[in-house]
Length: 134
Image (cartoon, rainbow, N blue to C red):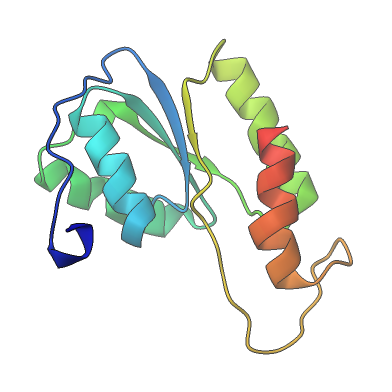
């Protein structure tokens, strides 16, 4: 049923909720951020690139989102320092986070190490989100 175009149609309110979505500038992350915003949540868009996040905000605004509740915060999950700085920023801005969507991910065809010395895919898809959640 769901693979044939089914959709979640229940109207669940997110008014007053604070949501954090990693990788919110494209794909599933963008659609998740948009839906949460349309349902009333303040959505923190954790993205690596400010320009792409701003483009996504403009796109979502054109689709009915409240841009004042779409907030970009820089977060590169391939950098522990970036994740820690992002977490500090979030803790300063909000006393509570109601929804965390660890959506961002990448796939590397070759072997590449991060500045922290870990394999890029492992750090971006596992260690970074774990540190952010912690």
